Length: 120
Image (cartoon, rainbow, N blue to C red; front, side):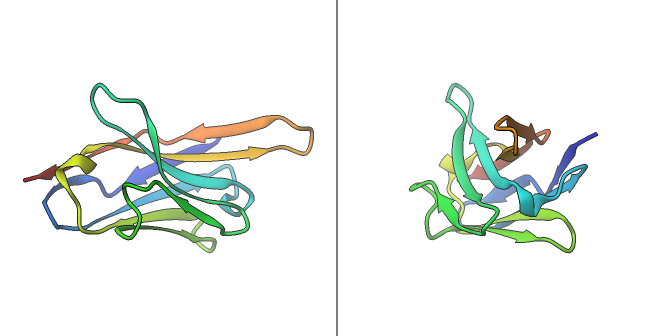
């Protein structure tokens, strides 16, 4: 059974920092594109950042220069360091794992999501 267990959300003031973690079991994160998405009330889920199996990173324009995604293969987890947080970063953040299997299926999983609230 695959699980993506997230931790590290919470409440922070404008300009503050938070670190999100996503610990995987049942999969090997280095074989997946691991990503973070977020969804604010009344808005669509959007990509925050992702990292390919080859460690190529990609960021949404709204977080470039402030957020950093990283992967720890020894712990089989992925992290998201969020700095210079703004109230508009307030959302539920979700960890995601996705890959194309050798038989060309799309295999993907989601974490449970954790609220991040940035106060002004």
